Amino acid sequence: MTISVHRDVVYARRNGFRPLALDLYVPSGATTLCVYLHGGGWRMGSRREGPGPAASWFFDEVASLRLAVAGVEYRLSGEAVFPAQLDDVQAALRFLGESRQAYGIGSDRLVCWGTSAGGQLAALAALAPGSPIAAVVCWYPPTDFDALSKDIEEAGGTGDRSATSREGQLIGAGLDERPDLAAAASPVNYVHQEAPPFLLLHGTADLAVPPRQSSRLASALTEAGASATVELIPGATHMFPELDESAAREVVRRSVAFLS
Image (cartoon, helix red, strand yellow):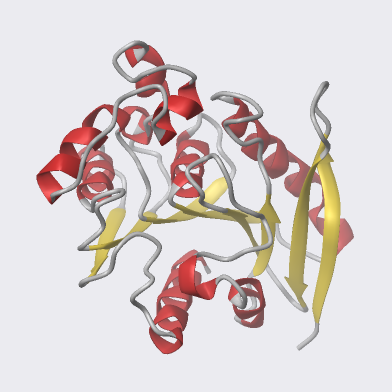
């Protein structure tokens, strides 16, 4: 099987910002294109790095399983506040939808996969009206900003609702100062019956984004009549650093199978 790699593909230009780019990995015969959104607390991260222990081999592995995948960058919170990040993701979806045939992808089926902060963006994009996304995988995503600090504290961590928290930097204010923006950035507030199927993977020992965040979104989706599955990774913390390569490849394959 041949995998064609297209790097530094500019998908959007924003006045006053750098051009936004993606890298595209296309296996021969691919019929589904996955948009991958990296984590990093909306403050850091790279479109070229896979999640956690899969950082160095993620894209090669996904493409080897016959799923075309685009690693997409988006503006970080130090560059622009929400909803700029979601605007970028939707621009990437439009670009890929319009240009997929030029890159050898014969189908119009789009799916999305996000980790941590990228999981929040993937969920929001999938739940948007008229979204082209057919299925979505989220690994350890923040889904309810208002409840996140409580979930962290109940899990044994220390919650932070200030403007300097990851979420505060994303919306440009403390969560209690701008509850409207906190709500606008929370996927739980956008669930609907026609939502695409969701697979949410979460570590049971995650204190940064506790697994309750995944279950909150899954419960809201199922109550609305949509499909959502939560799969817990026993003992895993945020980014799944406890997984050896074999276990990490298994959860990647599980996610690809769901999307495919």
